[in-house]
Length: 374
Image 1 (tube, one colour):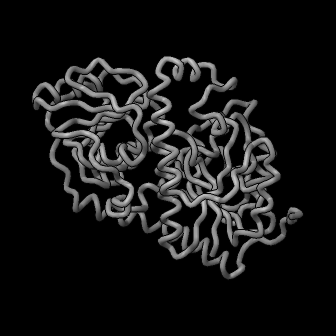
Image 2 (cartoon, helix red, strand yellow):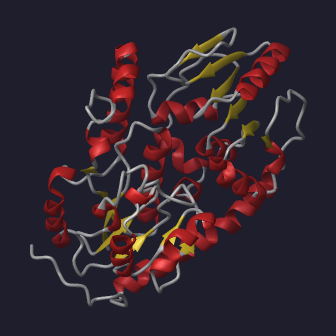
Image 3 (cartoon, one colour):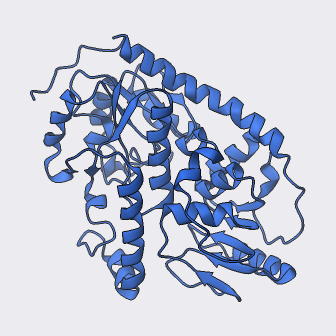
């Protein structure tokens, strides 16, 4: 089948880009032709540029314009090289233009990433709920709500209920967020893996860059401030004599370190794949440390870390998650056991996609929706 995928693919964020790539490749591995719909929401349209919607981000860009331009260039190069995009780019300014895609695809998929995080998108962005697909089958694969509650002004329950009712297959990424949407729809919502976990290390080899750093190093990646992570990294670096490499908007107070803020997704993967140790508070840093069998520690200290801990518990390596300064040794990981557990976790997600695509191909899906005129 020809499948159109809509997700966050143009945010200059490593997790967003890599989950979009992983979803594209997973659909292709299942025997279908997958194309990423080049739709830019309001946030994505001005991402990496000065924008009246993001005054705080404007200040950060103006402080380091060259670094931001390099980062933007790196992400654009990744997108051009590895995404199979629609020929036309579609904008939030005229979402109805997306209806022309009904003739190009047999089935539409939305997900993963935080496309259903209504606080992030500042309300319901209907294309991320496949509002434009007419009578073509609609599949949700692991969209994330990210929160267990939304600001009232962003959560139009009536609109969300109407959009969810038109899906043929529904799933989300985090089980703890199900109570937000499940009461709005009379069909079950499944819980499936983040798409980055559906590929193995070999699947990522074609997009990994050459090592951007020579020699041994510790890679640190912070999505949020975490003093304990910094202290632990400095202690381990001092004990081992290794250099510290990181990717951050701000220079971190770490001796013998290098900031590679301008790199793109290919370099990010390489930094993890070639590191001696990984220290982070990022879900996707944990994912790729697992896939590349790298020694790592995850500092999970806030509510957004629930999915990190869930993943590590399911893989039997919850000790890799720490919540305080700790430079002591952690037992080596039994990677054979981890890989076996991951195969089991993947099966449910692959079964969900196989079932959805097979039923779509055989015409076993909802056809009562009003078709949008082309």
